[in-house]
Length: 176
Image (cartoon, rainbow, N blue to C red; front, side, top):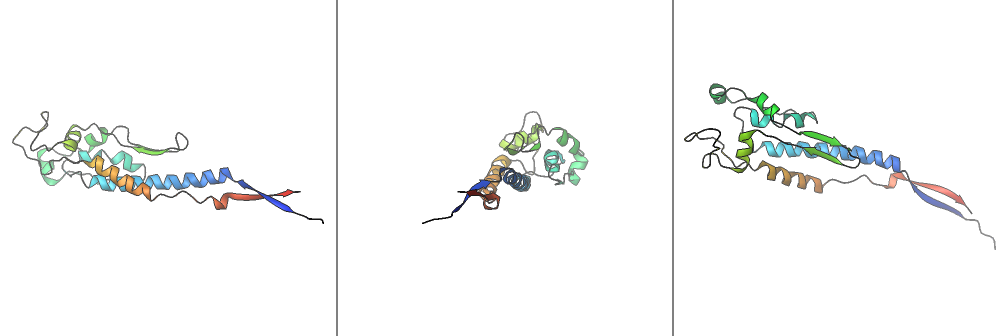
């Protein structure tokens, strides 16, 4: 008996899949950042504009604008501190595939009262370098926005799916 056979060896279009993966992860980290920002900003009150403005540089990396203007009472008492907030934002960036395979965003601020209010109720435990007692903040904290942001990020990341590999599998005929 005589048989003719034709075998097909699978090959993976690695370059094509890496491109698809890069596009998917860029979109995922941008969406994660947007959801993270929406989540943490719910915890940050609007007063002089400074605390919310610390997020502006990072938000700008995905084209998001953070409204940060002082409330009418703050304008009378302390004025706008939006510029101070922007200048107090350090290390706020979005990294896409740098180094290869890593998609991250980083937020960092050294704005003293935002850092203090993240962990403390300033009405019960006032920052000794800021408002002297009996000054009372309308939203004294603790904000705990970092924990809320982490929870939001983790919840979002559970739903992220990588591109399907099937379309990048190519068959190559092998003669026998």
